Length: 495
Image 1 (cartoon, rainbow, N blue to C red):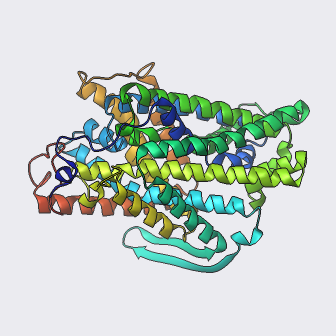
Image 2 (image 1 turned 60 degrees about the vertical axis):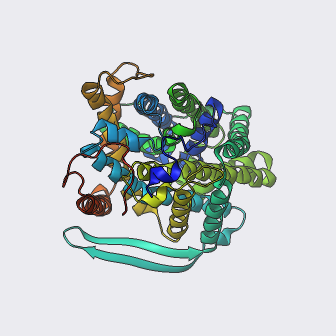
Image 3 (image 1 turned 135 degrees about the vertical axis):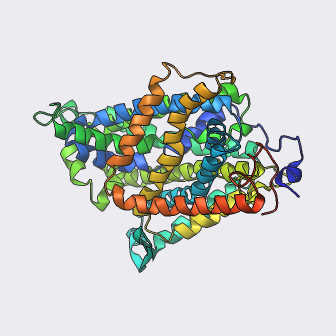
């Protein structure tokens, strides 16, 4: 029986249970994780002073440009899976669009659990503020494999008490997500309380104890437009851009949003504006309490994980350090929760379309959510909690930029040229300028990454393996390029 037959031919299997408020919260929860609380020293270090705030400002402008791309595509194609559908329709659903969308889902199957695992490990690292032994390694093993023509691939597997905390976090997120979307929307509102409480307390503390002499003690020639200034600004924008990512999460859930043609673009743009204001206010608040020289000194030290806790402890006492740590751990979990929810819909959408392994298309009989996709991504995230993720996550970010963000930024222009008659409930402002800026920004992030040449090897392994699987499946099924173009929406056949 095909995936479509399993779900009921012609029926809409998912429940449209989210309004605009829930859609914005899902995006915000995905965007605000541990990252913004621990990257302030990195951004300060990149520009050698409080002028690093420019990184957050320009990062927000870059997010707006890409958000306009996402908004136009999301409003025009409001189906589950988001970028899967965008790439399929932009580049032709029967030929190259099918290939690109398959490769997108293939990399999501690995990069999404890795992102979830990194969030859980970040949560465990911040939780070590309570119990330092959480970060002490119990066992470490170096993994390596030689790949012909690509060289040696390396990864570090380790085990610590923090690993158990990370695994427990994944299990809790899967447990809470294992229910209908209307109940999940209620959980998201509950989680949002802790997220906004953390940000509000930090901002309030900074503003009520603000010292402008500390905040604006710029070093000499801070704004002199030298090569070092632009290099530092680029590095700061790189970090800030990663902290803004997540505004596209609601597109993966479009089929569960009421009036998606209106609410998806609104959710994207509102979440970017809201998070940008919160990030900028939070960073200014911290700079008004903690000297930037002190922040910069922790940029590459383990203590950078606890900048916020140390600030609150300095102002109010030890109890406040522990209290804000609880709220930040809560915020990290909220991000993991939202991330796993959004990405679990991607393999489901592709399987339902016949362009991925069909077991991912199975829905829970009572609550109508893709439980197999959720459980598989959760299981992989648990396995990845044993890895040292820094290099692997960076490598997978390269292929995500190549097979999602960059293809979409260019693709929104391609789609306007190929299908000008296509209904577009939302059209990006100042077309095509935002798409061109987003494309240039992604190219810059792609090639300015430290160790890019090393990271591309990992990305190529994932890309080549995906190509092999796609072409073998196409050969066995006598589909394009070994047969006629595939009709979009064709039921999944036997694997």
